Image 1 (cartoon, one colour):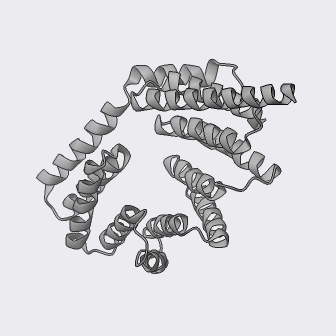
Image 2: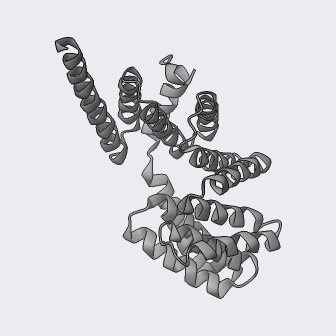
Length: 272
C-alpha cells in the first residue's frame, strides 16, 4: 500500500514536471528560440511516454512537427507527420487525426504537391464528416473551397456553401470561412467585395497578433490590388507581406534548426 502510494506520488510529480517542461517549450516558441523549444518538447514527450500518456505524447510530437513547418521545413514536417499518423492508426488512437490530415495537406501545399494536398484534404474531410466535429468540418470545408477555387469554381462554391451553413450557428473558426469566401469572390472576379472581406480579415488577424494569417492576407491583398490595376497599393501590401515574413524567423535560428534536424541523431523513439 505504501509503495503504491509512493508510485502515485511519483507519477503526479513527473506529470507536473512534464507539463512544466512543455510550457517552457511554448515560452521558447513565443520568443522565437526554436531550438530550445524543440528540445523541451522532446523532453516533455519522453516524460509523457514514461507515464503512458499517449494523448500527450502525440500532442507534443505534433507540436514539434509544427515548429518544423513554421520554419519552412515542409518536407521534414511531412515526413514526421506521416510517422505520427501511421503510429496513431496502428494503436487505434484516432483523436486529432483530422487535424493531422489537414496539416499534412497544408505542408504538401507548401511543396506545391497539388495531388497530395488534395488527397489529405479529402482524408480530413472524410474524418470530420464521420466525427461531426463542427469546428473541424467548417475549417476543412473552407480549405476545400480554397483548393478548388483555381480549378473548379462550382465545387469551390459547394464547399463554401457547406461552411456557410455551419456558421449560421457557430462562431469558432469564422475567419477561415471569411478568408475562403474572400478567395472565392476574388477567383470569380468580384474584386471589390473580395477586397472588403480581406481587409476585414487582416484587421482581425492584426488584432489577434496572428502573424501567419497577417502574412497571407497581405499577399492576397497585394494580388487583388494588382488585379484592380492599383499598383501602388499592390506594392504596399506585397512589401508588408515580405517584410513580416522575413522578420519573424531570422536566418541564424533557422540555420541552427537546419543543423539540428539533419545532423542530430536524437531519435523520437515514440514514433518509431
